[in-house]
Image 1 (cartoon, rainbow, N blue to C red):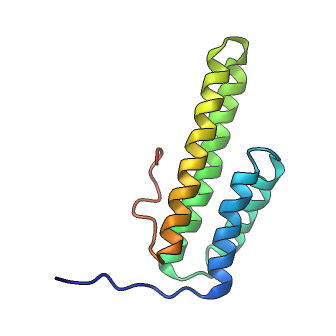
Image 2: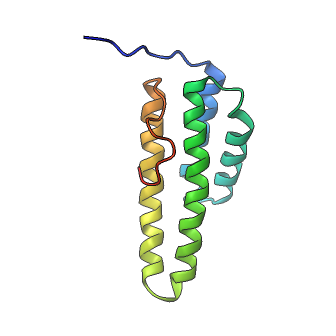
Image 3: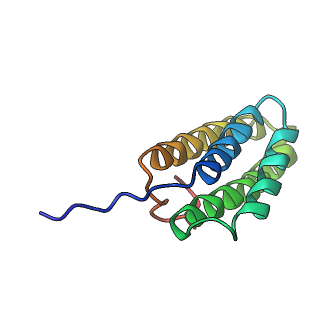
Amino acid sequence: MTDVPVQQPASNDSKNVKLIYILYLVGVVVGITSLVGVIMAYINKNDAPEWMQSHYQYQIRTFWIGLLYVFISALLMVVVIGFLLLLGYYVWLIVRCVKGMKALEQNQPIANPKIWLF
């Protein structure tokens, strides 16, 4: 049986990644914090260890894909389906942030940071 080596994060990098996930979750109520989070992800992604770069890539994609979902939802607000899509976006965002924080707490990279769903 082989053990997967556990990565030891640099404390600042780990705190930054966790803060970005929290900013995204707060963004459900206060939208501007998501913008702050993606800016932080862009600033910190190149200086982080390789396994942590997957978290930054995942966070950046979460922002841009989420922005697309919100834009489509806003266009469809004329009909009821826009509200349902917006609710789906919130669920999607929460699941992605929780998944990312769980992987971060275990000092593991995101398995597939380019995925659109979860």
